[in-house]
Amino acid sequence: MTTPPPGLRERKKRATREALREAALRLAVEHGPDQVRVEDIAEAAGVSPRTYNNYFASREQAIVAAVTADRETRIAAAVAARPAGVRLADAVTEAVIEQYTNAGEREREALLLIATGTALREAFLDAATGIEPPLTAVFAERLADTGAQTARVLAASVAAAVRIALEGWLRSAGASGADEAAGATGACGPEGGSGAGGLVVPSGSLPGLLRAAMAPLAPAFDAAEGRGRP
Image (tube, rainbow, N blue to C red; front, top):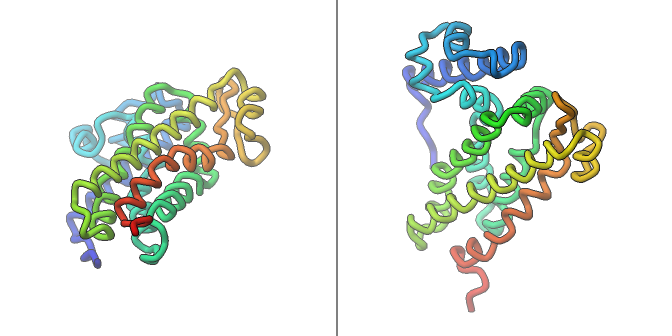
């Protein structure tokens, strides 16, 4: 399934969204999230606050978008690219793990910021629902004979599993101090980083948490594909 290239208007909208989320993250890192106003982000991106509100509902949403941008479409694309013979449960699990754990230095810095604020953590967790529409489309195409409702249920289940894994990951990041959190999650050295208040983002533990959260969905995926039937 090929998608036509975006038109000029769509490209402008994408550029504006990118400018806003990048400005939001930069200002949050420089001044702290609580010191950043929507008006500041809009000004830094060269747009009006009204335009800002057309793209993001809060400053937290914009900051988080700098980390999660396009992740859901990359996951869906990775699943769609897997050969038809690959078990769908495995394709989805590996795509999710790859996209949620393949973070560079910039993303790790942003995640440390997110781990220190309740509103940012909630916005980060809420962003997991963005995976539903693109995965629904991929599942519907692959499970053509199963029905659109099954595709939607499976996609929503993946989003829920991802959120549960991320909740556990962020909760462990705020255990009771850097040493205790690192010991509890196995995060140390390059796999973890300390932030304000001794918080640790235990990136080393996230693949295991994601895999464990996705595991209960495997029978549903197998049933939808007709695996195990006589």
